[in-house]
Image (cartoon, rainbow, N blue to C red):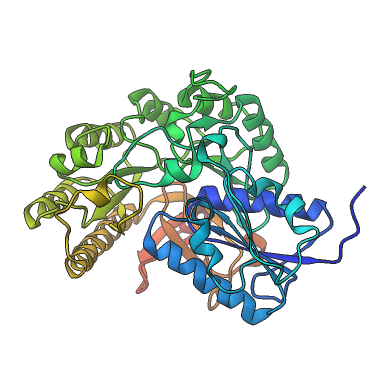
Length: 446
């Protein structure tokens, strides 16, 4: 029986798809406890901010969001969860207006902490040692978006010298395969057309599936099992490490009618010297092999890249190695991150720092190159028939969506097409860099 609670709760998520999946799950838990979910732009009794701590900007954003919530309701409870909460609870406790801070282990029990929490009774901090975060909590997002983010893995055993995620999320561990299949079926029954598989290091799927370090299943076995689930129309793989993206996975995706031709593969640097300093588990030769393998079996594949600029020791020469490597490589777009010093990482002690002005300049150079890559990729798709999943938003009379190979497309708004898959003809690029389309049926009538 649901508890009768008249409190309203609002959520704001900073960071990755994994955070969105967990926020959505926590929201469902609180709704079941009797809370009423409202928009973060509305007055609420409780504001929950799920944080990231990959960059310094993510930390600063948390403070901004707290102020925004308090402007809406100065008497509201402010609760901070997520990676920043696990890593720096003492720092967060100094932010005016924060009432509750929950670490990696405690965040999924937030309802127990906020039931009797009073405003201005002092900041309550509940943060575990990260080695206690050795269990898996299944999560998926639904209701807020056209697609669902399904969490299949959490934590990471890699020791990249710039990264705090292992400190914030703990060891690599996985959802039980049967539970993933069950959740995928739940999502599809709710009318969601696309599932995005997410995690910290999803290619490591299977490790810790039953509480031990062995791989009970592999990532290949996971996607093979999902491919057999009825009613799932398409599945997208989120970021996957190049050393874990095996040829068998690429070939399976190429033959699948459900898994889409879109890969996002972190590079971080095109300099082998820097990859070694970062303690990445591959060099540029292997990365190139993965890219060309994808193109050998999937002509129209979209390939995204993560890249870091300004890492310690990144001289002008080493940056140009990255720039030229990406320039020549047949990839479609980049996510460019400016290196920021993070406490308790090896990189912060390395010296050879790059000036902030130089980091900013290099970031801008790669973003310009990324736009050129994306434009060229979009141009290569013009004149083709693709299937788009239409989103609900109406922007100045236009609706938008993504093709299976992640081309952003638009056409005049038609509410009947929301959350529908439609075959379209990719006609032309507009001034905003989107591809204008029309119905494939209409296109074939000419």
